[in-house]
Length: 380
Image (cartoon, rainbow, N blue to C red):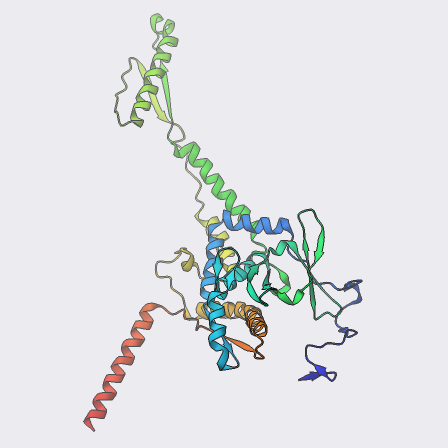
């Protein structure tokens, strides 16, 4: 397909979409939505560390997105493409295109956008590996046309350096460039405040402490020596409590009227089940993960319904649509570096969210049907 007598990707430099307002025009071209700021990156990182259910949900989404395979349009080069996908270095410790996709999707979900680099080897004129970039240091803008991106990297000293080869950068963002965790810091702060109060209450009332009260009688001798006896009772009580730490049991013997009570025994801890569940429901709804997959058993017979499976499948398909162009660009970049004039497409593994029991019953019924068909065929 051709546009204006040229190839589809060759947009005229003077072409300006009418839907773009003039307020978004700058000297350097068109501006894109703001990228992730360093403080936002730190906020989302701390949020995942502070609330384990959020980190678990993101890791579940990455795993449920599933595996894939790049398919070359020319079958003669499929083996080379497969070998590249399995052995390409990723960062300092990773290897394989799947490892790069997992890290890329992790950044995409956490920060709302992700960027990676195809690292080339000028000497051997081939792809040396893939690198996941720090999205908080990358500024994205448009070049001469709104359909071509340019990238700049912010240094540690605040200097901005434009990337000379933007064609080696792969970039993707969620709708609007907003993180999947947008809106969760406020809810999570309340949840953490409740947990902090629970810990403080257990420090005060959960750690049993005793109040030992000595009441001297009306005798003059008891009144005069009440101070010495109180000190002696306190010393003996402390000795008995310390001995219990080492497995030694000592009885406490006192003369006179001594009253021993547990501090805070009359008070009851607040029931936090309802507010905690309400907050977790909001978090789970934002992450689109069924609760029981995160260990939240709010019902004794909870399981994934067909509606939940359909919703989760649609979420995973959305993330796959974002990853597919990035992975295809990397595959086509490899083929181009090898001098191969071919394209590639991506085949994703089937998303299977059915229960093992249902699958086992389906296999049993299929086996029974096959056996009946064989008997009928033998009888004829």
